[in-house]
Length: 72
Image 1 (cartoon, rainbow, N blue to C red):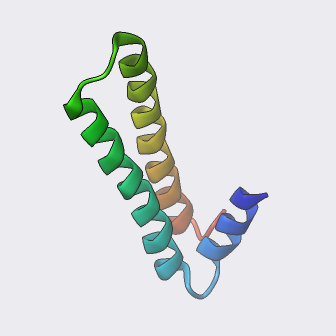
Image 2: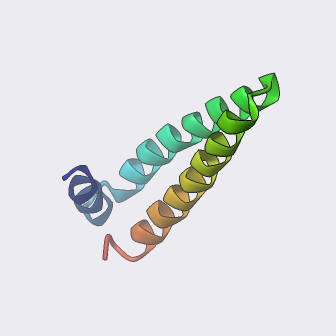
């Protein structure tokens, strides 16, 4: 449901503001992930955090592509 709301926001008149807002959330998550990795993690956690980092990167790319396509 939340993804549909994001898609509508990106296709609306305020799409640039919506993109900036959602990208800022994902950038903040990236910062927290990077900090956790710098501090050191147990091997099992490190692997999961790396996967989360990759998923976050993909989410940011999809967000930008959605905005370019007018949410379509």
